[in-house]
Length: 236
Length: 385
Image 1 (cartoon, each protein chain N blue to C red):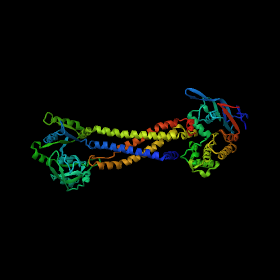
Image 2 (image 1 turned 45 degrees about the horizontal axis):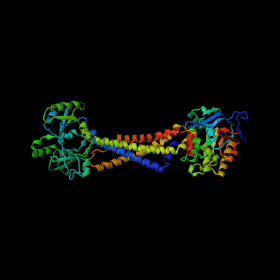
Image 3 (image 1 turned 135 degrees about the vertical axis):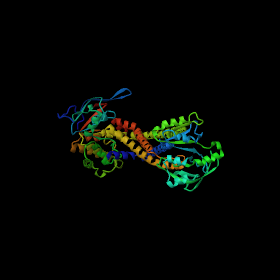
Image 4 (image 1 turned 90 degrees about the vertical axis):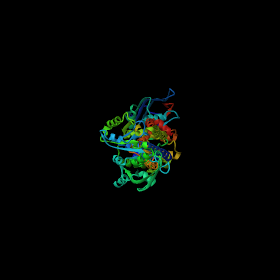
């Protein structure tokens, strides 16, 4: 496990995520508050990276920028060769639909949709037929061990089960990158361990590239690489 | 099917809130329809009037009679096809509460000019040949349980005494817009009595109804009739039947404007209530909208969900409100008796109700949808955390 980020890919291969000179600041009361400062980071394809740091260090902001749900103040974010900082809102939405799978701390499932409906949701943006969607959803739910909970609604599932549904939803479009923001933050220790095991499997068996924000050192231990942030800069 | 299902399930998330909002819309749309129907009922006489008929009355006031001899002169005006005459009677049936209009008419000419009052041949003959005969509309007969052959006593107010009429016929309307709450009897009977009581007031009538050969000549014929009696002791004012009816409506125009204003205020109020509901709904779901946007759904899609939910609720409740308007209007008409001779929920009213529901749905959704579409994903996701 490496605790220092690679500014340049050590294998010489083109990294999946390449961040250069990334800065992000928010304006509050007319004053610019820096969150990320001139940051460089590479994430290789198939990597499992944990972003750690104290509250306010900018790790969630970095994750949001990599996932294309926030825009940088300056700098470049190349993901699979696409500079997402230059994409318009509409282009970013299409890009996210095709390339990013999201796992949130509080699962963010649609309460009115069953497990099946929640996992199917991202596929509605594809041209897949109903039958093809059904096959994929069944497969994804089987992969996370929820084949027997297909018709259950989020309020009928435990926290761990809801997070499994969220993971199935993140996987369903076969994204280039999976981003997870405190995926075990709302779970007990045992369940958190199961979820992390599942993420490891996605990484090991399916080769999914995962970038995860976590406060939990035990969660970070599961990653291949831990990146520490402090006050918006990468800590050595 | 996915989106309609999602919209429907979202609608049912807060059942009580949805139910109460829907109830408000039902009441508002039904009230709007009822008030519009009241206004329509006021105009029913004008709307049912014929463009082929003119009304000639005293130019001073309707209360001043015109000499019957005018009939012959009017008949000679070019473009006039027929002339009839009539008087308002204003009698009381048992009690003053039992109000219904009664007219003394020159029956033969009057019935010929008003084909919308449909009588069977037998009833028509029976009426024409009985000087004490009368005909009444179906609604009036039903209200008081009258049958052909019954005797109807009226206590005169303008023309004193107790008047007894033999019911010789019950007319139906040619269509549903025809007033079926009026009683007609023979003008000759009235005139004979007046002559006996007040000889100088005999052979005078309240107004003439003039049938036109060509409705397009209405203005010209009116002018000629009035010119004929200019500078006489009883100058005339001739106008179309519609204008004559509208002159009565104009007397109560302030009330009508107030009713119309209230009908629109009701819609504005429910619009505000609905907008509040949608604003609360959207605010609660910012995290979900943000999640959907993160997954790749665009702002317009998210806004569409809000609009669809608002429109769905407004139109479903609006449809229920429209459906409720019909029994409500029927009950109202029953309660009002003959005050509103024609009380029909028109197609135009239904269309306005539907439009009102549509506008309520769209306006209520406008700001929440705009906010949902523009919400920054990171801000929306923070809402759940």
